[in-house]
Image (cartoon, rainbow, N blue to C red; front, side):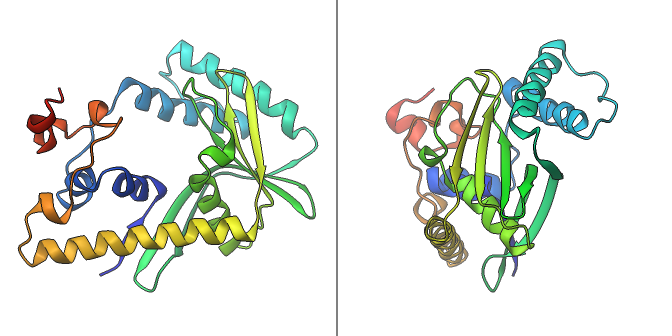
Length: 230
């Protein structure tokens, strides 16, 4: 059975296997927060701006203003580059039985040997790429599989008017790919345990962490009563 993975799916299993169980085994939807909804709308607006297309209708004013701020920041960074792709979707094999799916916000070519992948971040937090590198490195690996040899990756933080970049190395790609394949192997093994009759909370054990209070499945989680998480 072939599974399609994304960075979000890998991160969900890594951060809490039991939340992964609810979302990807049972297929329970996650509750969309205001921040998530605004993030989706932001992506629509900034993509239309980069492509110089009419903006989507019905977008809140604050989201439009944030997208305009991001576009202006982007222009100061890519004015010498050529846009290769916007919202580029790539699906590529990551194991013999699994596919990996990405949607890359923006790819810009600066010269023959300089191609950068950009990812929008609409939260207030700002961090260096190598503090949270796995998402962008997996994007770079996926791009490599499609013949787009990114040498640099970048997070764009419009709320703080900041762009953080990092160079891509084969060693960093290999390390991140190893992490991704390990999580896929662990999730598949847990699923096989579940099919054998192992209880879900054993096959996919809950993990107490900072994300618990914002988890869509907090009321169904066995950790809720044990640690009185509300």
